[in-house]
Length: 280
Image 1 (cartoon, rainbow, N blue to C red):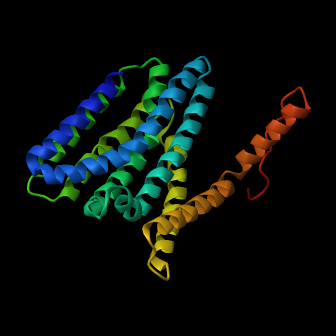
Image 2 (tube, rainbow, N blue to C red; image 1 turned 30 degrees about the vertical axis):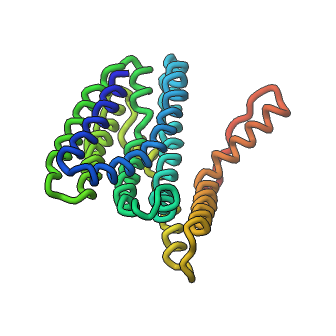
Image 3 (tube, rainbow, N blue to C red; image 1 turned 90 degrees about the vertical axis):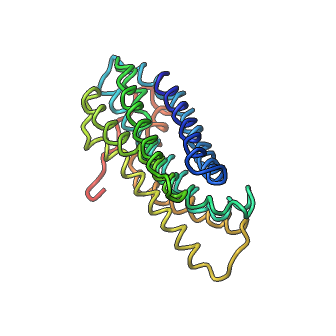
């Protein structure tokens, strides 16, 4: 796909510019930070490629179901992306020296900035697949080109600044991607910006609370811990807190899912969803 080719080309040009403007040492730290976050991005990208276009194409004759599927997919992707990137953010002081050595701890702030950028980059990841399935295959190309131009221009303006400014330049594409993705879905997908924001912001809020829980644990730990115990404990706190909040927020959807599965097993005709009672 053309936008994928543009993103790949932009990533290479970005690193070349960093090396030319800031030198090899800074390039090493920035390259490590981008590789760490791109690992998660690649996994999420595979999910979007495998699920997005086939699902939306199958529902093309039913626009309402197609819109519903998009909102559900965006909500799920937002939860996965925000939990993964914010988890990476919180535990970077442990896994960076473990995997790469103490000499690379200078890359931790860079990784954390790119993690925050990744949360919002992938929250709208299904937009391209939906628009292609809806018959607008090239709508995302100008957006991708503009985001690339903004990013590379921002990198050029970082001359004389420290490495953290480079990661802010890389994250500047969010200024283009997020609002224009919402606009394109409203114009061509007929899904209001409000409905899109509700789908992606609730999961981000849950992950932000998870991040807060982990950071409180890490900052109130009675004794300094080695990297491995600290990493495992932080991961446990994050998973438990996120799971508890997700079960509470999505309890009705889970109840309806379990009810539907039970009905299919017991009755030949489908059962209707359980309506929430007062206060639910």
